[in-house]
Amino acid sequence: MNSTRATEYKARADAFAAQGDTERAIRVYRQALDLKDDYFEVHANLGSVLVE
Image (cartoon, rainbow, N blue to C red; front, side, top):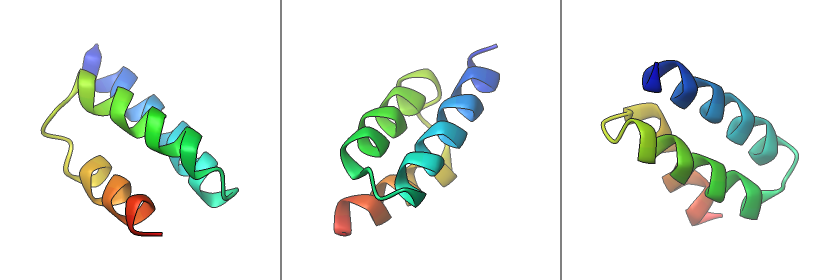
């Protein structure tokens, strides 16, 4: 169940990042990682947003 919710959070964060809303994207990526801390794609996407 947490894996599914983490995937939903990732999708939401990806949308925020695509819209340029980096603060929200960062917050939601971190929520996804709270649910699934080994989610590689979320770590990578969060890193990309933090670098911007």
